[in-house]
Length: 196
Image (cartoon, rainbow, N blue to C red; front, side, top):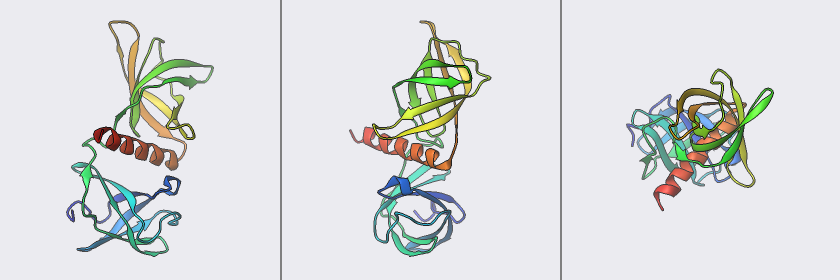
């Protein structure tokens, strides 16, 4: 595990209340602990309370549970986890996500059926002719109480023999919190689906 936790690597921390998710940088690595300097105050993160951790490595997205042994302002000393897993090799966890949504642009919208999403982007099918030079707004419903608004930029379009089109592209965000929320949602759903 120590070779996976490297100094200067960016890491995301998600406590039980994921609205308090935070990002930081690993500033020191010891045999039993590693130290993080957070970007924001550690609201919602308490000593000895387990949180989820996500960081990008050469092997893919590393995921594990651990807790803060000490909290000194924005400096947290985190216990090395007993177990870890790689979610997948690609940068963002991609999950099946089937919804009928509107892809909005200035002056109109397209009806789309999503196929899959990740924090990096989505794939969908539509019967409408979408201008891939445009950018679009889309709201992703994650639960009854929560949704994330993204800016979608098409990258690839293919015509389907049975009619219609399949498009894929990338997301941009109004704020980092939305990206973090979608990253965590996809990672959690991926684990739930795998454990079924």
